[in-house]
Length: 138
Image (cartoon, rainbow, N blue to C red; front, side):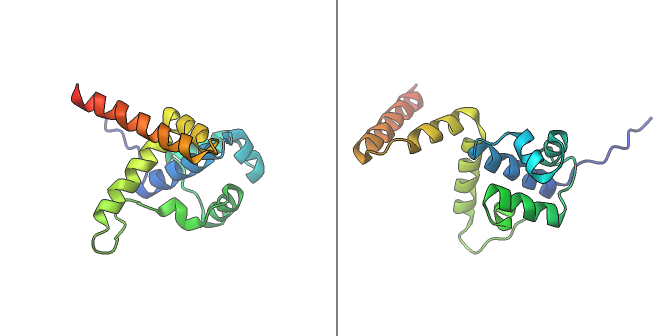
């Protein structure tokens, strides 16, 4: 028997991943976001996985709660047409999104922004670059 499950639309998956990205950047739980919207955390999970499509008014509410414009959720979306020369920017942006979507990237980012001394920040960047260069050499 052929299974007839509908696959989530790539745009819905992308929008959901951007909701998750922003929510985690703010340190907000699915429960808290759901509570703010008057829905369950399970529904937030479905939005974030792209299983359920987010309606326009709900997306507007989410953007208000997460303090980003609605367009944030569509940045670098599949099939998005960018201006000439935008290919490098898109791949760079995807790299940042992937980094911030990881637990380590999020932790590193949160810790880094707490460092107020510019000299210390530069030293941290130099350290990370040196470690990356070592890893590349191996």
